[in-house]
Length: 257
Ligand code: PEP
Image (spheres, rainbow, N blue to C red):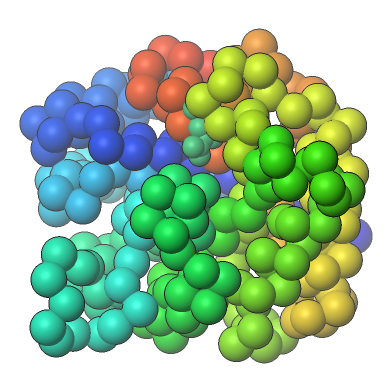
């Protein structure tokens, strides 16, 4: 049986300037150190705004933290006349491990297509970053499709350039559960996660499907994390709102305790 190291990831969205980021990461690192958190047992990552990443890198290097971090989005392009965009190469230079692609706030507010998201995932992968590919259905999608239909299609679209051995993480984030206060049930998360693992199997292959981590995201808190982590196909969580409070995020990371 393949062991997939659980990943607990915090998506800060547009919160915390670089000074607040330093204070937060320091406090998180101290809290987890006090609790003797084993980062090899449960991996921890944060996704700060771009302007914070250099500060986070400096702190992680100086204190030799095992905390992982990444950007919240990435350009499909490597360099050039793309005002406002950030390339995968720039993120890699800052020692990012991961980058989020296809978050619903990008898909819907910035009208990103499956093709754009596939190109972002490809750019990340080719630069040595692990893309964290977000998929999920809206409440409206649920009126017309079964729960896994839209996320499965989005994942198929995102993975067209992926081959066996390529590393990526999937986050199943039902849009109706994001920032809603009410999460999906563990059973709902498991059902869609298992369909998404089948998609990985069909598109990329058996071995990749066995090793790829599939996260749940949408109103995760310290009081509902345990149920999600018991699901056989859920290998971690992507946390928005609750990742902005150090004690709450640390409690989510320490879900085994
Ligand atoms: C998210 O937007 O990725 C998310 C999971 O948000 P929240 O935890 O606030 O629902």
